[in-house]
Image (cartoon, rainbow, N blue to C red):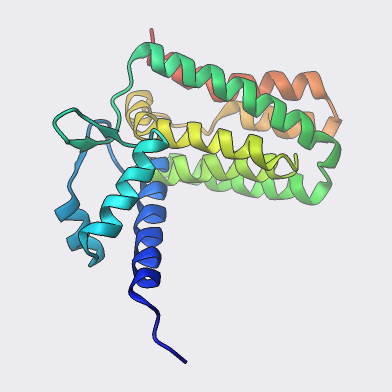
Length: 215
């Protein structure tokens, strides 16, 4: 078997760096305005400048990172208007995804959502911000996968990615001690086949916290 060509190795390294950084940003492992450097990324991942630069370029294109005119790379610090816009996008996309998922919401899915929600509650009790954001997104993604609307889900994930650091800041402000109340309403609406109730619960869940950041 031949050794991978340098270009193949570079592409694999770029993909590894990109996916790891993308997950960190989405799950709120980085604060708003946190700087990144090509040298720092290269050292952490043991890669050359090329895959580090390519990963940064992709994340900037997705809105996960911000590139200043001076060349400084950082996680975005979102204005109130930008947060409001992304919250509105979440409401539009995720309400539609949930609505499309409803006809395919069998009991196994509902049981899975209840189990994930138990983990969400556990992360809240531990005051684990990153664990909370990760399991909260897992709850939503698990439901939306049943919509069988991959383009729409990809758009929703891009919004989550742009909001990741801001969600971390929001969690710190909320000092939450109870799991999200609307998750139980989402599960109840799925059990009852209640589309209006489901749409309202999802819209409330994805926007209520973000509203606190724009007041």
